[in-house]
Length: 324
Image 1: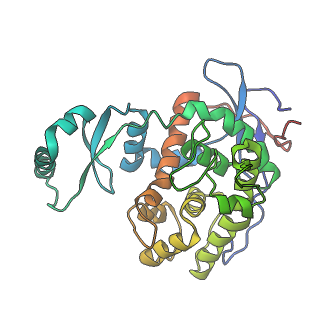
Image 2: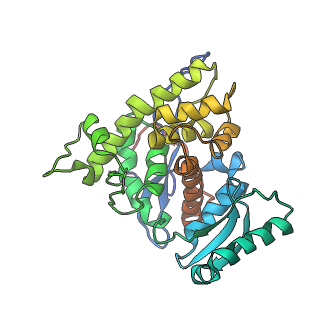
Image 3: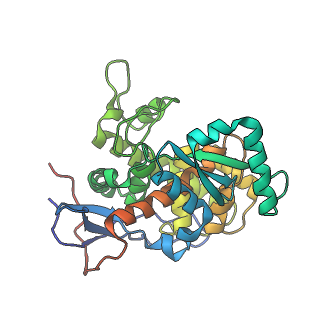
C-alpha cells in the first residue's frame, strides 16, 4: 500500500544513454498528490522540466492546451506548424462560411499578420470530449508502480495515458486498443494474448506491463542507437530525451530515424524535439509531429487540475508497489 502525505519521493533506477560518455544509473522523482476536492492520494511524475525548458510558453503547447479545453462545437484558427492562434469561432459559423469565404478569411489573416501567401491557416475544433487530464490521474496512479517495478521511467506511463486514450478503453481506426493503444502484433510480441476470443490489451495492468516492456526493450535501446551513431550525448532524465522516446513509441524507430536524417542533428536538446514538430519523413507526418506536443500540453493541464506548486519532503528509497 502507498504511504500517505502530501508528497513522497520515490526513486526509480533508469537506463544510461548509449552516448560517448557512459552515465551512472539515474533517478526520477515521483510525488503523491491529493485529487482536487478529494483526500485520495495519487502518484504522479513532477513536471518541473516543462517549465524550466520554457515549454509552457511555446505557441504549439498553448495551442493544444486551448484545443483540449474547448468544446467540439467551437474551434481556433491557427498557423500550421508554429500553431500561432489568430482567433476562435464556432464550428457552425465556420461551416456556414463555405470554402470560398473560409479562404477569404485565411487571406485576411495572412494580410493582417504579414504572412507569406503560402502560409497554411487551419481551423481546429475543440477536443475536450476526448482529452480529460483530471480523469486520467487515477490511471496514472495505477500504472506508476507497474512501470517502476519494470525499471522504466514512469514519466512515460503518465504521458501516454494522458494522450492515447484518456480515462477510457478505446480502439483506434488503425486497430490499436486499450489505455496504452497497443497494436495487436506489438501486444503479442510483449507477451499479451490477442485473438478473436481474448484481448488482454483491455486489461489495464497487463497493458501497462506490455507498454513498459516495449519502452524498456525496444524504444529506449533504439533511441540510444540512433543517438550513438550520430555521436550525440544524452541524459535519460532530460525532457528532450523523454520526448524522443515518446515519438518512437508512437511512430516507430524507422520513421523517427528518417526524420532525424532530414534534420541531421549533431547535438540533443529541446530544439531537436521542436524540429521534429515541423519535419516530415517516411511515415512521420502530422500525427507524429504532434505527439510530444500533446503530451506536454496535457501534463500542463494536469498541473492546472492538481496545482503546480507542491511541498517537497525528504527523498525516500521506498518506491510504490503494486497492491496485491
